[in-house]
Length: 579
Image 1 (tube, rainbow, N blue to C red):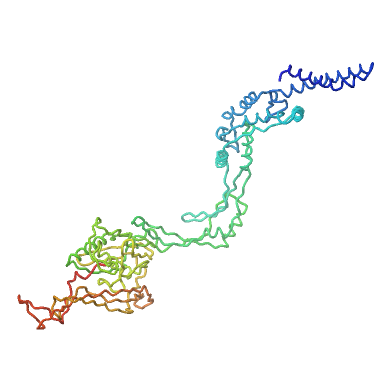
Image 2: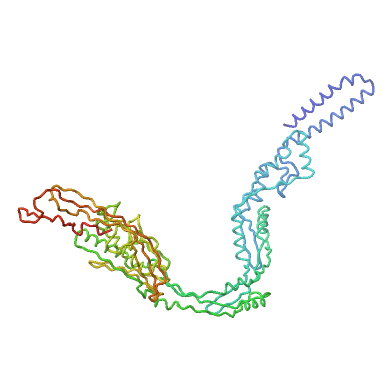
């Protein structure tokens, strides 16, 4: 709206007023009418001037007088002029302003750009510009009048990376302050000390944060002496200090890592009279940064680090040997498998508390690893399979474990009896299905040695026998037995009264196995280890049904037929010997 338009509006307003009161004036006479006209003219002129002034103010394109953003007066400025001024005071100086923190001799400077500071200049200027430009004409006039008389301050909002700021404060804290040291016990090779502790200093991180935040807000860079306070150490607790002093002596030992022996050093014990310790602590109660030697007694262990080698693998804890044959292809294959799996176990070390897993150590029994096919027990039958004979290895090792006194963790007997170890003393294995596990329950590492000849496999467990007066015996008690079921197959081509064993059967048994512990020849313990249940295996006999005149007949080639009272069994390799 221009001034010309405003004048035109005033004329319309005055003419309108004169038109409304003119009938009243017409009724007046003489001087009264003149006075009225003069008064009306004065009023009209005043109204016109006021209206022109009001319209001029309301049509102003600049920020009204009395409006501040922070401490910057932006009145009488356009929107773009206000933005330019504030950016020059705040945004453009972000990279120039440095905040300095000082604590005694240590100081650190931070540039505002490190904290990703952003000032919201445009929003603040828009808020300033909008004052006096909302609502009806009376509200606008009122708002403009108020800011002109009283002024108004608009906050310049800003943002920054709080994490980066806190990290900077923390870095300043770590580099400038002294951490408090609480009372403690210091143990050296042949002396023990009580340390009284030392005061430290601390700062109020919140106050530092507020100061830096205010510096960002005002874009100022005045140095700030960080307020610190002294922190005193806690009072020494006699029970805590006593428990830190006393120490049980501990013998040196050894453990196994990556199948190698690692020496565990000995620990020297320490003792002190608690009342003496209490008196020393009381006497030093108000002193700081003081170290006082304590009257302690050192207790040396029986086995020291330098003597460990004398104990390692010095004794054969137990050994056990089982035997096999190589007189058939099946048994020859078994021998290959026995030798191969035993070689993998040979030299295995087991630290105190460690568990041996047969399947983990030996691994899969596959053809590509060199294992051959031999008879095994599968689903109640005896059939050839790769790795047959492995169970003789696990069972022989199991017996060495039994007689050495090591702890069996997991063991299962076979479905049918085996002939290479006593009943109740076998250990069946099958990769991913049945495992044999035992634990080294001694205080020293053990080593498993394997020896295989053309007819035997032997396992020897070497370690440290701390109880040489103790001997272990294994006793197996038969609980019950079940005869092998017999199946007959009639053969019309065989002479009546003759028979041939097609499959040798096995009786079924139930055995309880006991570990008997004797000390100097006197039984001290009899422990039931497990109960083994063996199923009977069917006995199959082929018998002749062909009628002959004589009990013993000669064939045309002069060979004698089999006597009806004689049972003929198949060769050894027809009976499974690998399980």
